[in-house]
Structures are given as C-alpha cells and as structure tokens.
Amino acid sequence: MEPYVRVTGIVAPLDRPNVDTDQIIPAVYLKRIERTGFGQFLFNSWRKLPNGRPNPEFVLNNPRYRGATILVAGPNFGSGSSREHAPWALQDFGFRTIIAPSFADIFRNNCYQNGMLPVVLPQTAVDHIMEKAKTVPGYQVTVDLERCLVTDSHEFTVPFEIDAFRRHCLLRGLDEIGLTLEHQDKIASYERTHAIS
Image 1 (cartoon, one colour):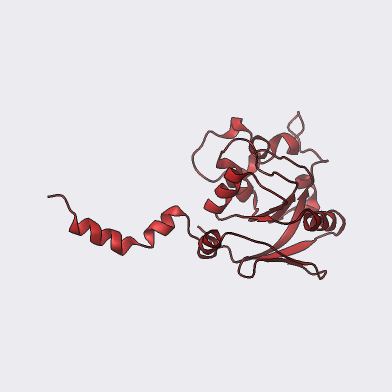
Image 2 (tube, rainbow, N blue to C red):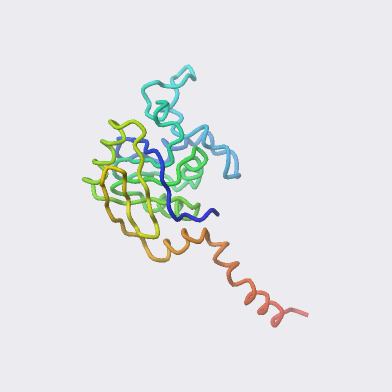
C-alpha cells in the first residue's frame, strides 16, 4: 500500500449529502475481486446519461476537475452497504483524499485499509473548500497527514483529527497484512519452535 504523507491536488466538489456506496459504485459492477478497473464505473448513474454519453451537468465530467485527487462532499458520505469496492473505485479514478463533515463508519474504515484518507472537517470548513472549488479554477488544497492540517494557497488552514493508530498505518503504508508482516521474524521463530513433527 502506498504511504500517505502529504497530498496536494485539485479539489472536485460533490455538493450532495448522504452519498451511498451504491451511488459510488453500482452493485451491477461488483463482479471482480481485483482492486483495479472500477474507476470507469464511479458514480456511473450520475456521470452518464441514459444513452451512455457523459452527463455534461455532472461535476466530474467538467474538464476543470480532470485529474482531481481530492473530493469534497456533503455529510454522511459512504453510507449504505459495506462494499470495499467503493474506495477501490474512488482510488482507481484518482482520488487519494475525501473531505466531508462526516462519513459512514464502515466506508471510513475501508478507506483506511486501502490507503485513502477520509478527512472530517467542520461544516463551515467544508463549505469554504466547496465554494472555492466551485468558483476558483484549478483550486487546490494540501492535506498534510504528518501535521494533520488542510491548507490552501489562499491562507486557509484547518486542523483535523485522526486516530493515532490509523495515522501510523497510513504514514507507513500499512494495511492489516503489512502490520502482520512487520513481525515476520517473530512469526517465523514461533513457527520453528512450534513446528509439528
């Protein structure tokens, strides 16, 4: 898993509350177990018109947000079913960070397990970032996990909180398997000592 230390990127504003995992990645596309290839189906019912063409009204189809690595969204982002494909689709599309006033618990944990950072900020801070992303072309923020700060080039700075264990894992690029492998020597020693003959 790629370590998350500091990300600076264009912000895409998804000004909607209660975005659920079926809207993030519709269930019809959950036919693979690989973590890649899901980005093309991200927000599929919003990104595409019934005829399959891109919906020009949907924010991620706007050329000014092409290459965005930070998504700012409304409260309760990632509600619904517990599918891990939701962060896979967001990450495959190019997002490393999601900023919102609140997240569904399982979605938030799935983000951590996949090297993405869900940042909870007060509604006023989210509103500020959302407005800037809508009105300032190329608006970028920096999310600094080492200092737990979100900043921009317009003198905006806001701190955020994160569980110390989750922060440790993200900074070092460790999922549960990576954490286990940090103790590989002890595991091997135990297996040698307790080998079944």
